[in-house]
Amino acid sequence: MARPIDGLIPPGGWHYFQSDVKLEAYSLSNLYEVVQHYRAENHLPIGDVHGDVNSYICGNFPNNCHGVDSVVVVSVDSPNRQSELLNDITIWAKNILLSQKQVRLVSDELAEARARTCLQCPKNIQYRSGCHSCIAASDRLTASIRQGRDTHSTKKLKGCSVMRHDNRAAVFFDKSHFDVTDSVPQNCWIKI
Image (cartoon, helix red, strand yellow):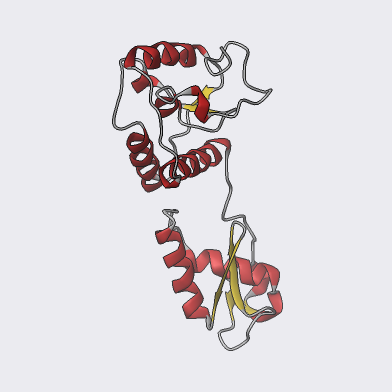
Protein backbone atom coordinates (compact mmCIF):
# COMPACT_ATOMS: atom_id res chain seq x y z
CA MET A 1 0.00 0.00 0.00
CA ALA A 2 1.25 3.49 -0.84
CA ARG A 3 2.19 5.77 2.02
CA PRO A 4 3.39 9.38 2.08
CA ILE A 5 7.06 10.10 2.62
CA ASP A 6 7.04 11.77 6.03
CA GLY A 7 9.83 14.26 5.32
CA LEU A 8 8.55 15.33 1.88
CA ILE A 9 5.88 18.02 2.27
CA PRO A 10 3.25 17.95 -0.50
CA PRO A 11 2.45 21.08 -2.52
CA GLY A 12 0.27 23.33 -0.38
CA GLY A 13 1.58 21.78 2.85
CA TRP A 14 0.18 18.86 4.80
CA HIS A 15 -3.54 19.02 4.08
CA TYR A 16 -6.64 16.91 3.49
CA PHE A 17 -10.11 17.81 2.24
CA GLN A 18 -13.08 16.54 4.25
CA SER A 19 -15.95 17.35 1.85
CA ASP A 20 -15.34 21.06 1.15
CA VAL A 21 -13.31 21.78 4.31
CA LYS A 22 -9.52 21.97 3.98
CA LEU A 23 -7.80 20.56 7.07
CA GLU A 24 -4.17 21.61 7.50
CA ALA A 25 -1.37 20.41 9.77
CA TYR A 26 2.34 20.90 10.38
CA SER A 27 3.27 17.23 9.85
CA LEU A 28 1.84 13.97 8.54
CA SER A 29 1.23 12.56 12.01
CA ASN A 30 -0.43 15.83 13.03
CA LEU A 31 -2.62 15.65 9.93
CA TYR A 32 -3.90 12.22 11.00
CA GLU A 33 -4.81 13.72 14.40
CA VAL A 34 -6.46 16.81 12.86
CA VAL A 35 -8.64 14.69 10.56
CA GLN A 36 -9.62 12.35 13.38
CA HIS A 37 -10.52 15.25 15.70
CA TYR A 38 -12.48 17.02 12.95
CA ARG A 39 -14.54 13.93 12.22
CA ALA A 40 -15.22 13.29 15.91
CA GLU A 41 -16.19 16.90 16.63
CA ASN A 42 -18.53 17.01 13.64
CA HIS A 43 -20.15 13.64 14.38
CA LEU A 44 -18.79 12.07 11.19
CA PRO A 45 -17.75 8.42 10.99
CA ILE A 46 -14.09 8.21 12.02
CA GLY A 47 -13.36 5.46 9.49
CA ASP A 48 -9.80 4.68 8.41
CA VAL A 49 -8.11 8.06 8.90
CA HIS A 50 -4.63 6.83 7.92
CA GLY A 51 -5.96 5.10 4.80
CA ASP A 52 -8.08 8.08 3.76
CA VAL A 53 -5.26 10.62 4.22
CA ASN A 54 -2.72 8.34 2.52
CA SER A 55 -5.06 7.77 -0.44
CA TYR A 56 -5.66 11.51 -0.80
CA ILE A 57 -1.99 12.47 -0.64
CA CYS A 58 -0.70 9.61 -2.79
CA GLY A 59 -3.53 9.95 -5.29
CA ASN A 60 -2.89 13.67 -5.77
CA PHE A 61 0.88 13.79 -5.21
CA PRO A 62 2.27 10.35 -6.21
CA ASN A 63 5.85 11.66 -6.24
CA ASN A 64 5.54 12.25 -2.48
CA CYS A 65 4.82 8.59 -1.71
CA HIS A 66 6.41 5.15 -1.38
CA GLY A 67 4.76 2.28 -3.26
CA VAL A 68 2.74 4.46 -5.64
CA ASP A 69 2.28 1.75 -8.26
CA SER A 70 -0.32 0.10 -6.02
CA VAL A 71 -2.39 3.23 -5.31
CA VAL A 72 -6.10 2.98 -5.81
CA VAL A 73 -7.84 6.29 -5.27
CA VAL A 74 -11.35 5.97 -3.91
CA SER A 75 -13.74 8.61 -2.70
CA VAL A 76 -13.89 8.66 1.08
CA ASP A 77 -17.01 10.82 1.14
CA SER A 78 -19.61 9.11 -0.96
CA PRO A 79 -22.74 10.98 0.08
CA ASN A 80 -26.04 9.45 -0.84
CA ARG A 81 -29.54 10.88 -0.90
CA GLN A 82 -30.28 9.78 2.66
CA SER A 83 -27.07 11.11 4.21
CA GLU A 84 -27.49 14.45 2.42
CA LEU A 85 -31.06 14.73 3.78
CA LEU A 86 -29.83 13.78 7.26
CA ASN A 87 -27.25 16.58 7.09
CA ASP A 88 -29.83 19.08 5.79
CA ILE A 89 -32.28 18.16 8.55
CA THR A 90 -29.59 18.49 11.22
CA ILE A 91 -28.67 21.95 9.91
CA TRP A 92 -32.37 22.93 9.71
CA ALA A 93 -32.92 21.91 13.35
CA LYS A 94 -29.73 23.68 14.53
CA ASN A 95 -30.76 26.87 12.74
CA ILE A 96 -34.13 26.82 14.48
CA LEU A 97 -32.52 26.27 17.87
CA LEU A 98 -29.97 29.04 17.30
CA SER A 99 -32.42 31.58 15.87
CA GLN A 100 -33.79 34.30 18.07
CA LYS A 101 -37.33 33.83 16.78
CA GLN A 102 -39.86 32.14 19.01
CA VAL A 103 -41.15 28.91 17.50
CA ARG A 104 -44.94 28.82 17.48
CA LEU A 105 -46.34 25.31 17.73
CA VAL A 106 -49.80 24.13 16.73
CA SER A 107 -52.21 21.84 18.58
CA ASP A 108 -51.72 18.07 18.68
CA GLU A 109 -54.94 17.64 16.69
CA LEU A 110 -53.70 19.81 13.82
CA ALA A 111 -50.27 18.13 13.92
CA GLU A 112 -51.97 14.72 13.72
CA ALA A 113 -53.99 15.80 10.65
CA ARG A 114 -50.84 17.12 8.99
CA ALA A 115 -48.96 13.91 9.83
CA ARG A 116 -51.65 11.80 8.13
CA THR A 117 -51.17 13.94 4.99
CA CYS A 118 -47.38 13.45 5.12
CA LEU A 119 -47.74 9.68 5.54
CA GLN A 120 -49.47 9.53 2.15
CA CYS A 121 -46.86 11.70 0.41
CA PRO A 122 -44.10 10.13 -1.74
CA LYS A 123 -41.74 12.95 -0.67
CA ASN A 124 -41.81 11.62 2.92
CA ILE A 125 -38.62 9.52 2.69
CA GLN A 126 -36.36 7.62 5.07
CA TYR A 127 -33.22 9.53 6.01
CA ARG A 128 -32.08 7.78 9.19
CA SER A 129 -29.32 5.52 7.89
CA GLY A 130 -25.55 5.38 8.01
CA CYS A 131 -23.71 7.16 10.81
CA HIS A 132 -25.40 6.18 14.08
CA SER A 133 -24.04 9.11 16.08
CA CYS A 134 -25.21 11.49 13.32
CA ILE A 135 -28.72 10.02 13.48
CA ALA A 136 -28.77 10.27 17.28
CA ALA A 137 -27.63 13.91 17.14
CA SER A 138 -30.30 14.74 14.56
CA ASP A 139 -32.99 12.96 16.60
CA ARG A 140 -32.02 14.93 19.73
CA LEU A 141 -32.17 18.23 17.85
CA THR A 142 -35.52 17.52 16.20
CA ALA A 143 -37.04 16.30 19.48
CA SER A 144 -35.87 19.51 21.10
CA ILE A 145 -37.44 21.80 18.52
CA ARG A 146 -40.77 19.97 18.72
CA GLN A 147 -40.46 20.09 22.52
CA GLY A 148 -40.70 16.32 22.76
CA ARG A 149 -44.25 16.30 21.47
CA ASP A 150 -45.68 13.41 19.45
CA THR A 151 -49.01 12.07 18.28
CA HIS A 152 -49.98 8.61 17.03
CA SER A 153 -49.04 9.34 13.40
CA THR A 154 -46.06 11.66 13.93
CA LYS A 155 -43.97 8.76 15.24
CA LYS A 156 -44.17 7.16 11.77
CA LEU A 157 -42.97 10.22 9.83
CA LYS A 158 -39.66 10.53 8.00
CA GLY A 159 -38.03 13.48 6.21
CA CYS A 160 -39.34 15.73 3.45
CA SER A 161 -37.16 15.47 0.34
CA VAL A 162 -38.55 18.78 -0.97
CA MET A 163 -38.57 21.05 2.08
CA ARG A 164 -35.47 19.31 3.56
CA HIS A 165 -36.91 19.08 7.07
CA ASP A 166 -37.94 16.43 9.57
CA ASN A 167 -41.67 15.90 9.08
CA ARG A 168 -42.08 14.63 12.64
CA ALA A 169 -41.07 18.05 13.95
CA ALA A 170 -42.37 20.21 11.09
CA VAL A 171 -46.01 19.19 11.49
CA PHE A 172 -46.00 20.91 14.91
CA PHE A 173 -44.80 24.25 13.50
CA ASP A 174 -46.97 27.17 12.53
CA LYS A 175 -47.00 27.67 8.74
CA SER A 176 -45.30 31.04 9.11
CA HIS A 177 -42.00 29.20 9.72
CA PHE A 178 -41.88 27.82 6.18
CA ASP A 179 -40.90 29.31 2.83
CA VAL A 180 -43.01 27.38 0.33
CA THR A 181 -41.34 26.47 -2.95
CA ASP A 182 -42.99 25.61 -6.27
CA SER A 183 -41.77 22.02 -5.98
CA VAL A 184 -43.95 21.31 -2.92
CA PRO A 185 -46.72 18.85 -3.91
CA GLN A 186 -50.17 20.37 -4.39
CA ASN A 187 -51.72 18.29 -1.59
CA CYS A 188 -49.05 19.28 0.97
CA TRP A 189 -50.46 20.70 4.21
CA ILE A 190 -48.01 23.60 3.91
CA LYS A 191 -49.82 24.81 0.76
CA ILE A 192 -53.35 24.22 2.02
